[in-house]
Length: 156
Image (cartoon, rainbow, N blue to C red):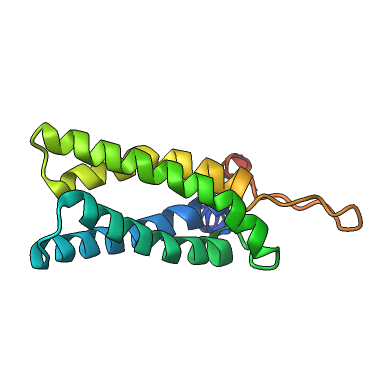
């Protein structure tokens, strides 16, 4: 039990774990907003996907900045400047994916789930090493994220 608890604690400290938890929360919000917009507005699918996407991404940026990557102590302007091309690329991939899947007869919400799933890795990599990257501070001790593989092999 002690080893499993250590692994869980270590996993909770890693940005990937926090990112995935926030991604699930944000994606649930995105899908709920998409379903509501689709049900109560006469907007076309591209418009409802766009509205839900942009509202969710504003929330997602703030949550990932603060909780997943602990980057709220760094300059937000630079992060937003790096975030803009990332989110624009993700938006275009999402819109093209949902539109293409819709043309193949896939429903709006399932198409959005498929498109979102394909962008998950793309987003983590860009958030971690581009949007919320950290410049090394020569005066500070180097910090890194815990290595999950090392904890799993710990035999103490």
